Image (tube, rainbow, N blue to C red; front, side, top):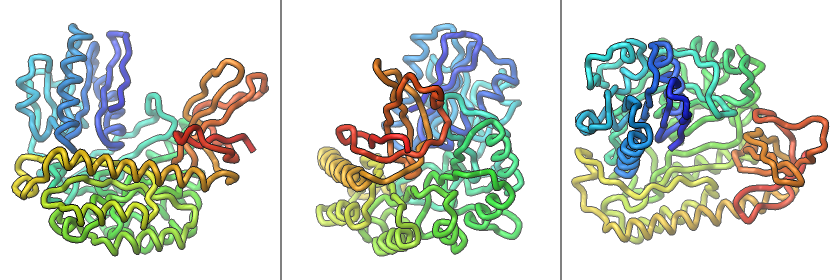
Length: 436
């Protein structure tokens, strides 16, 4: 969860759960609510990826109302889209908006309907919203795609987001130019399934083609990052960008989920184990500095010890570095919920083993970076007493800290790009370096 809470009762307050797409949409919501003249209002943008995410949202709503008894709480996001009645029955909630409604000005102006949630599957387009800033963020997120046409057996997100729909290139270009003019130096493409981009647009442009055109039309864009990709949907032009354009950051986050073929088939994923191995091998051969992240589900129904070992082993085989581990969460109405379930204690144990493997892989990567030079995007500058500490992320998205002399004439600021040489690690939590 990320939040942007302020004590001023006249401001719009945002609490955001879940993905980077929600982060983008929260800024749109802030602008729309402000334009509608709302005040003393808290917008809660929920996530439905797991039962835990939904539990945290409900818990947060109750806490927010206790701490802000006079505030009006509006709940939206994937969980509200899928389970509007659940939130509509909460005494703390003033209104419930669906994922389509939250992106429309009239939804915030309409105060007569307490629950405003439409059929998300009927939505055919993604509305364009120009955003000039992201509160508290040094990198900017833009939506290039929304929804999903696939039906993985464990997932409810299509029912919260609808079918896949893409943002045309012209709108992407306009948004990127506005954000660059506002001082952002790194842009992140977000969506539910961004490698499915373009299939609903005239001429069906691919994600790779669109990135190439964006780089041509906006040459001042120096850093582009992709939020997550499906390895079997990477098109020839995207491979070409990965290989030859340094403006695409060397950090690819894979929607992996599992490393065992039978589990992947039961998940109804589009890739098999060998596809992941081939993808990582090819990406690394084209871009030797690339670093991989991955989403992995622990304890999917029917997963036995041998199947789990295949998933555990693929972390090392593919040299995966940044892992997001999700204990399997039974979602009512999904095919996976009807499959034989793995015991809760086993799921918890397997998730712990996956996280341990991820920690080990991250430490291995950190050690390999000693002596290397990276460009960091400054996120914050903190006072350490005798010196300042610059914190941020490298081009490969590794956390990094750099000590800085307080007496320097030119102090770095959040959003700056700085070349740094890696010297060591901070107890395995982050890289430590010096300015080059």
